[in-house]
Length: 113
Image (cartoon, rainbow, N blue to C red; front, side, top):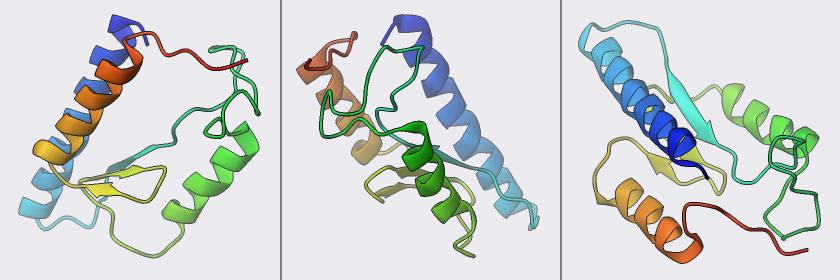
């Protein structure tokens, strides 16, 4: 996970929270939320389904994302993790999870072959 990727994702998450909370404040019907799908096998990262129990195919990932989009729940200002954990702010849950992941895996994630 190169530095540019990590920092851009952090900015995206912060914007998701900021816009979502502004929508709530304005009593808008708009929703903005993010889904963290976890590891997805793509040409970009070189991962393949089966490299790890956590690497999903693009098709599996699309099904998971679609489930949240069409579940008829209001996910405004939320970040939904692939395991269903929901974050609605940057308090300890999200920060600690990210920090622990980086501490365990480093900035460059490696998949078993």
